[in-house]
Image (tube, rainbow, N blue to C red; front, side, top):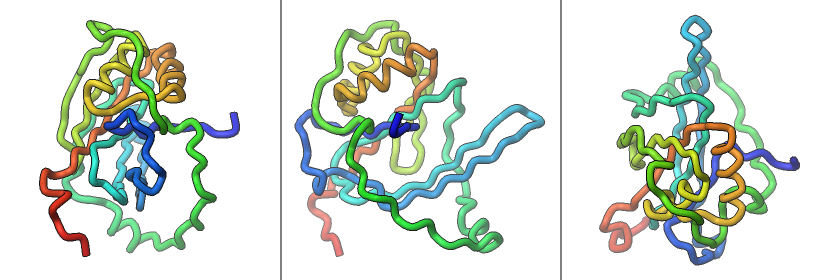
Length: 184
């Protein structure tokens, strides 16, 4: 495949938003630590978004049941001090292919085919750890929870449901006063 997406963006609205109106990733820092002795991988992600004035989120498929928790203290400042580096040049603009963007509604019904295993507050996001045996029910659960699916995202979800993956759905809901605050 020309692209491989590890997670997909989902928006609260089923209407197509112009790219300049969509929340977009402003900054991302990721640390992955493999603990070979325990057979565990720790994934720490710090993100900042532009135009975060609407509900949106992303869904991350994981092959094993993840533990989701907020990090007490960000490791990134110490890492940068200890291991200085030059930023990677900005990539070419994203064409939006395969990222769960666009319009469309989920398909199928919910029921016991989607289970919410945990719900955690992580920074500005609410993280739902899910299991699903039906991609249509998962797309419906996401839409019911303000993370509308799209035809591209439905295909993407189906692939991981078939493989028996778990999902972490991270939903950002802007503060109630986001539209009345002055942005400087």
